[in-house]
Image 1 (tube, rainbow over the protein chains, first blue to last red):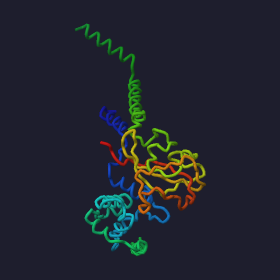
Image 2: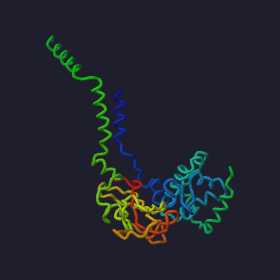
Image 3: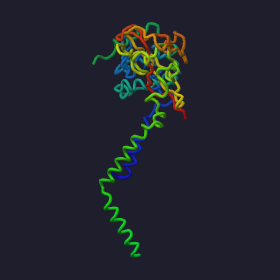
Image 4: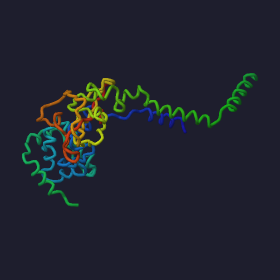
Length: 136
Length: 169
C-alpha cells in the first residue's frame, strides 16, 4: 500500500457523513413534502406516487402548470425560488429518465407566474392529464 | 567513523531481528482500525447526534420532542424511534425541526404515530414549538396520522431523526 493510499483511506474513515446543507431542496422536500409522499416518493393511499411519474406531467399540455399549482406545491411554505428548486430536485431524483431527456428546470419567475392561478378541480385536472400520458 | 558504522549496523540488525513485515502490517491494521473507531468515541457521537440519544427519551423535555403532541412511544413499550408491540407506525406523518442542545444544530424530526391499539395514556407530552393552526395541516400537530393500512386507532408517537436541517457554522 502506498503512503498516499493510506492517507486517503484514513481520511475517508474519519470523514463524517455529509449532512444536507441549510435550506437545500432535499431538506425542503423533507419538511414540506415527505410527510405524505414519503422519503422515496412512493406516496400512500390517496397520495400520488412520484416515482417515474412526476416528469410525465411535463410532456402533456398543462402538466407543467399543474405541478406548480397542485395545492401541495402552491400552498407550501416555500418561496418561489425554493419551490422551483424542490420541483427540480423531485424530477431529478424521482424521475431520472425525464431529467436526462432534456428537462427544462423551473425557475422562481415561472413559479411566481403559475402559482397565483388557483387550481379548483385538482382531481379532475389530474385525471385529464394522466389520460394524455403516452402509453408505453 | 568505524564505530558509527558499527553502531548503525548493529541497530539495523537488531531492528530486523526484533520486527518483521508482518508486525508492520499488524501495526498498520491497528492504526486503520483505530482510525475507523475514532468517530464512534463519545466526542464524535455528540457531533453527529443523529445516532444515539443524549438525554432521556422517556422525558417530555427531551430535545427531539420539541413539537410533540401525544403520548411518548418510549413510555408505552416502544422507544423514541420504534412503536410499541402490537401497534404499527403510520408511514404518513408530519415533520419539523428541533435543535439539539448538544451541538446546536437543527435536525429534521419525523413524528410518526403508532396506530392500531388503544391510546397508551402514559407520558403525555404537549410541546407545540413551531405548531401552526390546523388549516396549515403540514405544520399542525393535532392531526392524528393513523389512516390507511396502519389502522385508525391512535396509540402513541415516536420522534425519529431523518436528517440535518442546518449547519451551525
